[in-house]
Amino acid sequence: MFPVSRRRGLAALGAALLSVSAVPLALAQSAPSAPRGEPIRIAMIEGLSGPFANTGEAVYRNLLWAAERVNARGGVKLPGGARPLQIERFDSKGQTEEALSSLRLAVDRGIAIVAQGNSSAAASALIEAINKHNEREPQRRQLFLNYSAVDPSLTNEKCSFWHFRFDAHADMRMSALMGVLREDKDLKRIYLIGQDYSFGQGVLREARRQLGAQRPDVQIVGDELHPIGRVKDFLPYATKIKTSGAQAVLTGNWGNDLTLLVKAARDVGFEGRFYTFYGNALGAPAAIGEAGVGKVVAVADWFPNVPNADSETFYRSFRERFPKPEDDYVHMRMQLMIEALAQAIERAGKVEAGAIAAALAQADVSLAGQRGRMREGDHQFQQNLAVAVMERQGAPGVKFDVEGSGYGFRVIRNLAPQQAEMPHTCTMGRP
Image (cartoon, rainbow, N blue to C red; front, top):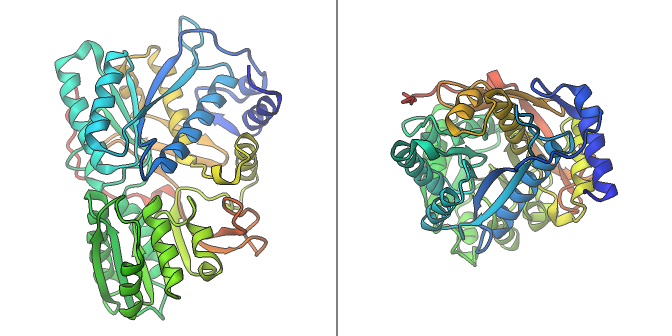
């Protein structure tokens, strides 16, 4: 049974926000009893130790909260009775081989649904492994839900019937950022820096392409990659950024690789802008502090300060559930992902990967004023994208700060799904 405070928060969230076609609002408001059937298990394969453990724990909080919401309204409705969702943790330690070992363990435990995201390299390996496994053992097929691995190839040349991505891929994020950068007429010199693996390489490659197409007048004064998760001192990189004369930095860095980079930039006195994929949380705003006001730009599917009453209720409910400032990292896309999964299982009428995948390809879900739909052709989720700039809490448009830092993000551009959408090259094989 949930503690009283959690029950109240979940009940308020369900009554105020939920709008999923498979679960009528009246059902959410009726506060049904907890489901008693066998749990529907989801294997979360993520780095829960090592340099990016904080990002893995942030994912777990999001998936846990989403599952709690589904369970609080009565669970997933199936012909044999309602069943709860259950998140099972598998620690990949931030290593691809460990992620594959976790996948094998999930197979052995009979778990049909896998979720992962905090590494495009790991996601690529998991897609390949699941494809092979499902062909060899069709009676134990698995489904892969991807909430953060944004290498565009995963829904293009590497697309798979068994893989569904719920985050905007890197090129979509870059295009949203470039819409703001394009209007920064004072910008003449920019420094590109990223993590040396498929995602980081892809971000810088796309940055060069889009800068060349949209801002050919901007000089790229630095373009480098660094080892992922192994750099403890970014001062040498920050020094190069400052001495290059760059007026802005563009990076896809995430986790501690972003936090340590912006800390080092602050320490060397860099005063330019940061155009980021993930600069809105996990310590980055507090690390850069006052120097980031009006200068740190981030892109995301959603921000707490999106001007929407349902969105505000959603965010307040998350903060009630996880009141520690350092736990303040909620992802709308992960909530929509779990809603889409629950919807798909109910439509499939059973917990079997093939049936769920066929239903999930048609997913169309809404929550807290945000709507997303799955594109059947490549299994790329289509949803809003927003660009926001860091400001002091209390400034116009900044009701909520981040992680108790005193700084929040003001939305300066909101792209509808049709505006954020990009074409794909997927030719999907189907069972």
